[in-house]
Length: 222
Image 1 (cartoon, rainbow, N blue to C red):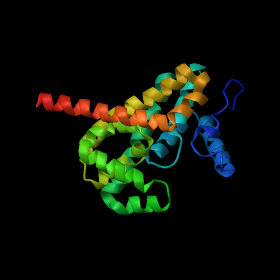
Image 2: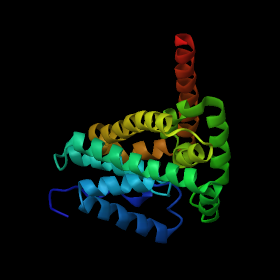
Image 3: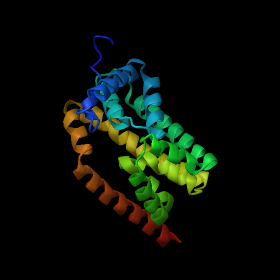
Image 4: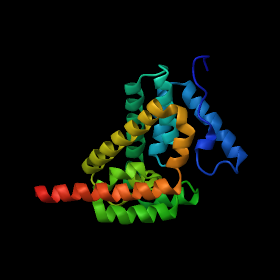
């Protein structure tokens, strides 16, 4: 790492790692490695996030945004790479679940990479709101990680999946990168708040409100 580059984000930004020093060290090394390889690191990190695997994609994007503010990276380049990586990972997850069915989720659940509760909650939300959920769902960690799998297993067509996932991903990636760009000095506090129970409640309320607004607009037009 060069002298002018900021230090990578602490692994403590990810929830519930403080009690596991092995995982804490692992995340720290991973995040440092991601930063070292530059723009490809963003793509790789967000592919992992798009696959629904346990990885702090929001922290990575915010940190890269902070680095962009110090002129280490271009802001538009960071947003574009984040979007490309996340979409690639999400489409892979969607295609795998569409092709192989519930067996993919059963294996991920056994490995504890995704939670059964998140699967059930996301399934109910998609049954109620359809692909519209994929827009605000990008901001909800439990929903974001499993929604491509649920969409694939549920037989959602590729076109609406790509459109609504792309819209949600564009908003989500831009938001987190800009958070780091504008408020990077307070990144520890922001990430802590974003991962708190209050953020989940607020996020759920925003998700329901946004989904209802989109559904109402579509109903009015028809």
